[in-house]
Amino acid sequence: MNPADIPNVEAMLQLWMLGMIRPGAAFVAAPVFGAANVPVQLRLVIALAVGLPAVAASGMVLPAEGIVSVPGFFLIIGEVVIGLAIGFVLQMGLAAALLAGEVISNAMGLGFASMVDPLSGASSSAIGQFLAMLATALFLAADGHLLLIDIIVGSYTALPPGNAFPSWDALGGVIRFGSLMFAAALTIAMPVGFVLILVQIIMGVIGRSAPALNLFAVGIPATLLAGIVLLGVATPAMAEAIARILSDALDAARMVAGI
Image (cartoon, rainbow, N blue to C red; front, side, top):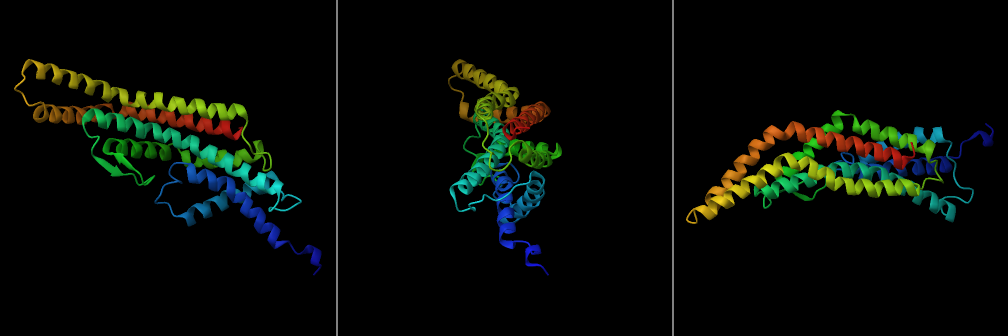
């Protein structure tokens, strides 16, 4: 066998490692894939499965100076930045639902009742947990995980390795989308939160009319009951708003990826 026909195994492994960086960084920051209960080994396998065909299609080559060099360092940094940006934008869409749940919980008087979020490992309110699970279910039902992989693969064509830094317009779009996240959270919480504020105003008027009435014994159960009923009635409207912000998050991720 001609030695020239033997593939360079070391260079091939380095190329595979570079191909895993962008999808791996995106999966760390993205919802569902970046959950604390998702094993790291599974993320690595998925990143390898996504990165290998994308690298082969983009024609990625190693820097002439090798990975341990200034061009190799900037290539790795660019891959990490674009991957984190794609995943972070999608995470902001899920964070809008979680923020809306925090607003509703405080209005219902459940701000003290917190649970550990299995997706992030952080503590969140009960209503925030409910809306986060609803957003995750909608994300998966709309094939958001497959669309994320499609965006990552498409980004190799629009932003080939070595020139993977997002444009200033894309970074500005991420900042604008971050500001819209708070408006989206308010939109999601509005159907329930506005009525709960009215209930609290009514209880305040009753308290002024009958000072002997114990508001803690009457107001909190009334607010909780109204909140539970309103959640049952307004969940379809909130689900529609969550689906819309998740769709906007996917569009923002495409903008970051340049596709």
